Length: 304
Ligand SMILES: Nc1ncnc2c1ncn2[C@@H]1O[C@H](COP(=O)(O)OP(=O)(O)OP(=O)(O)O)[C@@H](O)[C@H]1O
Ligand SMILES: [Mg+2]
Image 1 (cartoon, rainbow, N blue to C red):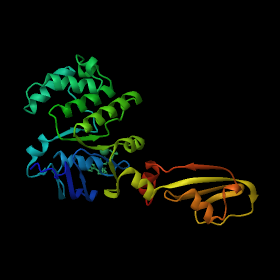
Image 2 (spheres, protein in one colour):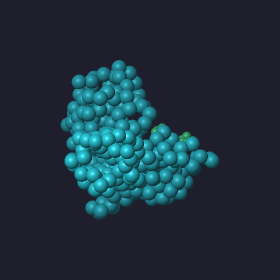
Image 3 (cartoon, rainbow, N blue to C red):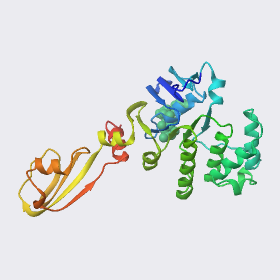
Image 4 (tube, rainbow, N blue to C red):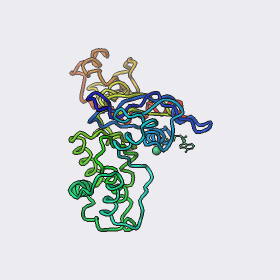
Protein backbone atom coordinates (compact mmCIF):
# COMPACT_ATOMS: atom_id res chain seq x y z
CA UNK A 1 0.00 0.00 0.00
CA UNK A 2 2.37 2.69 -1.11
CA UNK A 3 0.41 4.50 -3.78
CA UNK A 4 1.78 7.99 -4.13
CA UNK A 5 -1.51 9.57 -3.05
CA UNK A 6 -1.75 7.58 0.21
CA UNK A 7 -1.27 10.09 3.06
CA UNK A 8 1.55 9.49 5.54
CA UNK A 9 -1.06 9.67 8.29
CA UNK A 10 -4.81 9.56 8.05
CA UNK A 11 -6.98 10.28 11.10
CA UNK A 12 -10.66 9.55 10.58
CA UNK A 13 -13.29 10.64 13.07
CA UNK A 14 -11.28 9.52 16.10
CA UNK A 15 -13.07 9.54 19.45
CA UNK A 16 -11.29 8.72 22.72
CA UNK A 17 -13.04 8.44 26.05
CA UNK A 18 -11.26 7.71 29.30
CA UNK A 19 -14.29 6.75 31.38
CA UNK A 20 -16.33 9.94 31.58
CA UNK A 21 -13.51 12.13 30.13
CA UNK A 22 -14.02 12.82 26.42
CA UNK A 23 -10.43 13.47 25.35
CA UNK A 24 -11.10 13.37 21.58
CA UNK A 25 -14.49 14.10 20.09
CA UNK A 26 -14.30 13.09 16.42
CA UNK A 27 -10.97 14.29 15.09
CA UNK A 28 -10.14 13.99 11.37
CA UNK A 29 -7.17 15.18 9.30
CA UNK A 30 -4.44 13.87 7.01
CA UNK A 31 -0.70 14.47 7.02
CA UNK A 32 0.46 14.36 3.43
CA UNK A 33 3.73 12.80 2.35
CA UNK A 34 6.63 15.17 2.93
CA UNK A 35 4.51 17.56 4.98
CA UNK A 36 5.26 19.04 8.41
CA UNK A 37 1.94 19.23 10.22
CA UNK A 38 1.55 21.01 13.57
CA UNK A 39 -1.05 19.97 16.14
CA UNK A 40 -1.46 22.96 18.43
CA UNK A 41 -3.63 23.20 21.49
CA UNK A 42 -3.59 24.13 25.18
CA UNK A 43 -2.83 21.65 27.98
CA UNK A 44 -5.37 18.85 28.02
CA UNK A 45 -6.60 19.49 24.45
CA UNK A 46 -6.07 15.85 23.43
CA UNK A 47 -2.78 15.98 21.49
CA UNK A 48 -0.94 13.22 23.37
CA UNK A 49 -4.10 11.08 23.43
CA UNK A 50 -4.17 11.16 19.63
CA UNK A 51 -0.47 10.30 19.37
CA UNK A 52 -0.95 7.44 21.87
CA UNK A 53 -3.60 5.99 19.56
CA UNK A 54 -1.35 6.26 16.50
CA UNK A 55 1.48 4.42 18.28
CA UNK A 56 -1.00 1.81 19.62
CA UNK A 57 -0.46 2.61 23.30
CA UNK A 58 -4.17 3.40 23.51
CA UNK A 59 -7.16 2.17 21.52
CA UNK A 60 -9.54 4.64 19.89
CA UNK A 61 -13.11 4.45 21.23
CA UNK A 62 -14.30 5.09 17.65
CA UNK A 63 -12.74 5.94 14.32
CA UNK A 64 -9.42 4.91 12.85
CA UNK A 65 -5.85 5.94 12.26
CA UNK A 66 -3.73 4.75 9.34
CA UNK A 67 0.00 5.13 8.76
CA UNK A 68 0.84 4.98 5.03
CA UNK A 69 -2.44 3.12 4.59
CA UNK A 70 -1.85 0.61 7.41
CA UNK A 71 -4.64 0.63 9.99
CA UNK A 72 -2.95 0.89 13.39
CA UNK A 73 -5.43 -1.42 15.08
CA UNK A 74 -5.57 -4.18 12.46
CA UNK A 75 -1.96 -3.90 11.13
CA UNK A 76 0.01 -2.48 14.07
CA UNK A 77 3.33 -4.03 13.02
CA UNK A 78 3.33 -2.50 9.53
CA UNK A 79 2.14 0.83 10.92
CA UNK A 80 4.85 0.90 13.61
CA UNK A 81 7.66 -0.01 11.19
CA UNK A 82 6.77 3.11 9.22
CA UNK A 83 6.80 5.53 12.11
CA UNK A 84 9.20 7.00 14.62
CA UNK A 85 7.85 8.43 17.85
CA UNK A 86 9.26 10.84 20.39
CA UNK A 87 7.11 10.85 23.50
CA UNK A 88 6.40 13.89 25.65
CA UNK A 89 7.90 12.12 28.67
CA UNK A 90 11.64 11.52 28.67
CA UNK A 91 12.21 7.76 28.77
CA UNK A 92 15.75 6.35 28.41
CA UNK A 93 17.59 3.54 30.08
CA UNK A 94 20.58 4.84 32.05
CA UNK A 95 23.26 2.14 31.78
CA UNK A 96 24.41 2.35 28.15
CA UNK A 97 26.11 5.06 26.16
CA UNK A 98 24.42 7.04 23.41
CA UNK A 99 25.96 5.10 20.55
CA UNK A 100 25.17 1.70 22.11
CA UNK A 101 21.55 2.70 22.61
CA UNK A 102 21.19 3.62 18.94
CA UNK A 103 22.79 0.35 17.86
CA UNK A 104 20.43 -1.68 20.07
CA UNK A 105 17.53 0.29 18.72
CA UNK A 106 18.54 -0.40 15.11
CA UNK A 107 18.71 -4.11 16.02
CA UNK A 108 15.31 -3.94 17.64
CA UNK A 109 13.83 -2.75 14.37
CA UNK A 110 15.69 -5.42 12.42
CA UNK A 111 17.84 -2.92 10.53
CA UNK A 112 21.41 -4.11 10.71
CA UNK A 113 23.90 -1.82 12.41
CA UNK A 114 23.99 1.34 10.37
CA UNK A 115 27.14 3.20 11.41
CA UNK A 116 26.76 5.84 8.67
CA UNK A 117 23.11 6.48 9.54
CA UNK A 118 23.86 6.67 13.26
CA UNK A 119 26.70 9.14 12.64
CA UNK A 120 24.48 11.28 10.40
CA UNK A 121 21.71 11.43 13.01
CA UNK A 122 24.03 12.10 15.95
CA UNK A 123 25.75 14.92 14.08
CA UNK A 124 22.43 16.40 12.95
CA UNK A 125 21.22 16.45 16.55
CA UNK A 126 24.50 17.83 17.97
CA UNK A 127 25.05 14.62 19.96
CA UNK A 128 28.13 13.33 18.16
CA UNK A 129 30.61 14.64 20.74
CA UNK A 130 28.48 13.06 23.50
CA UNK A 131 28.22 9.62 21.89
CA UNK A 132 30.37 7.88 24.49
CA UNK A 133 28.43 9.31 27.44
CA UNK A 134 26.05 7.17 29.43
CA UNK A 135 22.45 8.38 29.50
CA UNK A 136 22.68 9.31 33.18
CA UNK A 137 25.53 11.72 32.29
CA UNK A 138 23.38 13.61 29.78
CA UNK A 139 21.47 16.83 30.46
CA UNK A 140 17.68 16.96 30.02
CA UNK A 141 17.95 18.60 26.60
CA UNK A 142 20.48 15.97 25.46
CA UNK A 143 18.20 13.16 26.65
CA UNK A 144 15.38 14.59 24.60
CA UNK A 145 17.60 14.78 21.53
CA UNK A 146 18.66 11.16 22.13
CA UNK A 147 14.99 10.19 22.00
CA UNK A 148 14.69 11.90 18.61
CA UNK A 149 17.80 10.04 17.41
CA UNK A 150 16.24 6.72 18.47
CA UNK A 151 13.03 7.54 16.64
CA UNK A 152 14.97 8.11 13.40
CA UNK A 153 17.32 5.11 13.40
CA UNK A 154 15.09 2.80 11.35
CA UNK A 155 14.43 5.51 8.73
CA UNK A 156 10.68 5.83 9.26
CA UNK A 157 8.55 7.71 6.71
CA UNK A 158 6.55 9.43 9.44
CA UNK A 159 7.94 11.06 12.58
CA UNK A 160 5.68 11.91 15.52
CA UNK A 161 7.15 14.58 17.78
CA UNK A 162 5.23 15.31 20.98
CA UNK A 163 6.73 18.55 22.39
CA UNK A 164 10.23 17.83 21.08
CA UNK A 165 11.75 21.13 22.17
CA UNK A 166 10.51 21.30 25.76
CA UNK A 167 13.64 21.82 27.87
CA UNK A 168 15.95 22.36 24.88
CA UNK A 169 17.80 25.70 24.92
CA UNK A 170 17.25 28.33 22.22
CA UNK A 171 20.42 27.66 20.22
CA UNK A 172 19.93 23.91 20.12
CA UNK A 173 16.26 24.36 19.34
CA UNK A 174 17.24 26.31 16.22
CA UNK A 175 19.70 23.56 15.26
CA UNK A 176 17.08 20.91 15.89
CA UNK A 177 14.61 22.68 13.62
CA UNK A 178 17.26 23.06 10.91
CA UNK A 179 17.76 19.29 11.10
CA UNK A 180 14.01 18.67 10.96
CA UNK A 181 13.86 20.83 7.82
CA UNK A 182 16.74 18.87 6.33
CA UNK A 183 14.89 15.58 7.00
CA UNK A 184 11.76 17.05 5.51
CA UNK A 185 13.79 17.88 2.41
CA UNK A 186 14.56 14.16 2.19
CA UNK A 187 10.86 13.33 2.15
CA UNK A 188 10.12 12.64 5.84
CA UNK A 189 6.56 13.48 6.96
CA UNK A 190 6.23 14.96 10.43
CA UNK A 191 3.42 15.44 12.93
CA UNK A 192 4.50 17.68 15.77
CA UNK A 193 2.92 19.21 18.82
CA UNK A 194 4.49 22.29 20.33
CA UNK A 195 3.62 25.20 22.58
CA UNK A 196 6.10 27.43 20.69
CA UNK A 197 3.78 29.00 18.15
CA UNK A 198 6.44 31.03 16.36
CA UNK A 199 8.28 27.76 15.66
CA UNK A 200 5.12 26.19 14.31
CA UNK A 201 4.61 29.25 12.11
CA UNK A 202 8.12 28.86 10.71
CA UNK A 203 8.20 25.09 10.29
CA UNK A 204 4.75 23.77 9.54
CA UNK A 205 3.18 23.56 6.10
CA UNK A 206 -0.19 23.26 7.82
CA UNK A 207 -1.44 23.34 11.40
CA UNK A 208 -4.57 22.21 13.21
CA UNK A 209 -5.74 23.99 16.32
CA UNK A 210 -7.30 21.55 18.75
CA UNK A 211 -9.29 22.54 21.82
CA UNK A 212 -11.23 20.26 24.18
CA UNK A 213 -10.84 17.29 21.84
CA UNK A 214 -12.10 19.06 18.72
CA UNK A 215 -10.28 20.56 15.75
CA UNK A 216 -11.22 24.24 15.67
CA UNK A 217 -9.32 25.24 12.52
CA UNK A 218 -6.99 23.62 10.04
CA UNK A 219 -4.89 25.01 7.20
CA UNK A 220 -1.74 26.85 6.19
CA UNK A 221 -0.54 29.29 8.84
CA UNK A 222 -0.89 32.32 6.50
CA UNK A 223 -4.45 31.32 5.63
CA UNK A 224 -5.42 30.88 9.29
CA UNK A 225 -3.91 34.23 10.21
CA UNK A 226 -5.85 35.91 7.42
CA UNK A 227 -9.05 34.18 8.42
CA UNK A 228 -8.90 34.39 12.20
CA UNK A 229 -6.55 37.18 13.14
CA UNK A 230 -6.89 40.96 13.01
CA UNK A 231 -4.26 43.57 12.32
CA UNK A 232 -3.90 46.55 14.57
CA UNK A 233 -3.72 49.86 12.69
CA UNK A 234 -2.81 53.02 14.60
CA UNK A 235 -3.41 56.28 12.73
CA UNK A 236 -1.67 59.47 13.91
CA UNK A 237 -3.43 62.49 12.40
CA UNK A 238 -2.01 65.92 11.56
CA UNK A 239 -5.00 67.62 13.27
CA UNK A 240 -7.11 66.42 16.20
CA UNK A 241 -10.66 65.29 15.37
CA UNK A 242 -13.69 65.01 17.69
CA UNK A 243 -14.83 61.57 16.59
CA UNK A 244 -14.31 58.89 13.95
CA UNK A 245 -17.10 56.40 13.26
CA UNK A 246 -16.03 52.94 12.14
CA UNK A 247 -16.98 49.36 13.17
CA UNK A 248 -13.26 48.41 13.55
CA UNK A 249 -12.48 51.35 15.87
CA UNK A 250 -11.08 50.13 19.21
CA UNK A 251 -10.06 53.35 20.92
CA UNK A 252 -8.82 56.82 20.17
CA UNK A 253 -9.16 60.54 20.68
CA UNK A 254 -7.66 63.72 19.28
CA UNK A 255 -4.80 62.80 16.97
CA UNK A 256 -4.37 59.05 17.70
CA UNK A 257 -6.90 56.36 16.70
CA UNK A 258 -6.59 52.56 16.89
CA UNK A 259 -8.45 50.01 14.71
CA UNK A 260 -8.52 46.20 14.56
CA UNK A 261 -9.24 45.31 10.95
CA UNK A 262 -9.43 42.20 8.80
CA UNK A 263 -5.97 41.10 7.62
CA UNK A 264 -7.14 41.54 4.03
CA UNK A 265 -8.23 45.18 4.47
CA UNK A 266 -5.73 47.62 2.96
CA UNK A 267 -4.80 50.94 4.54
CA UNK A 268 -6.25 52.67 1.48
CA UNK A 269 -9.63 50.99 2.04
CA UNK A 270 -9.66 51.91 5.73
CA UNK A 271 -8.83 55.56 4.97
CA UNK A 272 -11.52 55.67 2.29
CA UNK A 273 -14.12 54.31 4.72
CA UNK A 274 -13.08 56.98 7.23
CA UNK A 275 -13.18 59.67 4.53
CA UNK A 276 -9.54 60.47 5.22
CA UNK A 277 -6.53 60.62 2.91
CA UNK A 278 -2.77 60.61 3.31
CA UNK A 279 -2.72 64.41 3.74
CA UNK A 280 -4.52 63.89 7.09
CA UNK A 281 -1.82 61.52 8.35
CA UNK A 282 1.35 62.17 10.28
CA UNK A 283 2.14 58.51 10.74
CA UNK A 284 0.69 54.98 10.57
CA UNK A 285 1.66 51.92 12.60
CA UNK A 286 0.51 48.45 11.52
CA UNK A 287 0.92 45.34 13.73
CA UNK A 288 0.30 42.22 11.66
CA UNK A 289 -1.63 39.32 13.18
CA UNK A 290 0.20 36.15 14.22
CA UNK A 291 -0.52 32.49 14.79
CA UNK A 292 -0.57 33.31 18.48
CA UNK A 293 -3.59 35.61 17.95
CA UNK A 294 -5.36 32.82 16.06
CA UNK A 295 -4.55 30.34 18.82
CA UNK A 296 -5.80 32.68 21.55
CA UNK A 297 -8.97 33.45 19.66
CA UNK A 298 -9.82 29.79 19.04
CA UNK A 299 -8.88 28.42 22.44
CA UNK A 300 -9.89 31.15 24.88
CA UNK A 301 -13.58 31.45 24.08
CA UNK A 302 -15.78 29.40 26.33
CA UNK A 303 -12.80 28.37 28.43
CA UNK A 304 -13.97 26.94 31.71
N1 LIG B 1 -4.59 7.70 30.66
C1 LIG B 1 -5.53 8.62 30.91
N2 LIG B 1 -6.57 8.35 31.74
C2 LIG B 1 -7.52 9.27 31.98
N3 LIG B 1 -7.56 10.50 31.43
C3 LIG B 1 -6.55 10.83 30.61
C4 LIG B 1 -5.49 9.91 30.30
N4 LIG B 1 -4.64 10.52 29.44
C5 LIG B 1 -5.14 11.75 29.23
N5 LIG B 1 -6.29 11.95 29.92
C6 LIG B 1 -7.15 13.15 29.88
O1 LIG B 1 -7.47 13.41 28.54
C7 LIG B 1 -7.46 14.80 28.25
C8 LIG B 1 -6.46 15.08 27.13
O2 LIG B 1 -5.13 14.85 27.62
P1 LIG B 1 -3.85 14.85 26.68
O3 LIG B 1 -2.69 14.35 27.46
O4 LIG B 1 -4.19 14.15 25.41
O5 LIG B 1 -3.69 16.43 26.39
P2 LIG B 1 -2.52 17.22 25.65
O6 LIG B 1 -3.17 18.03 24.57
O7 LIG B 1 -1.44 16.30 25.24
O8 LIG B 1 -2.00 18.22 26.79
P3 LIG B 1 -0.51 18.79 27.11
O9 LIG B 1 -0.33 20.01 26.23
O10 LIG B 1 -0.61 19.17 28.55
O11 LIG B 1 0.48 17.71 26.86
C9 LIG B 1 -7.13 15.48 29.57
O12 LIG B 1 -8.37 15.84 30.17
C10 LIG B 1 -6.44 14.39 30.37
O13 LIG B 1 -6.62 14.60 31.75
MG1 LIG C 1 0.55 16.15 25.69
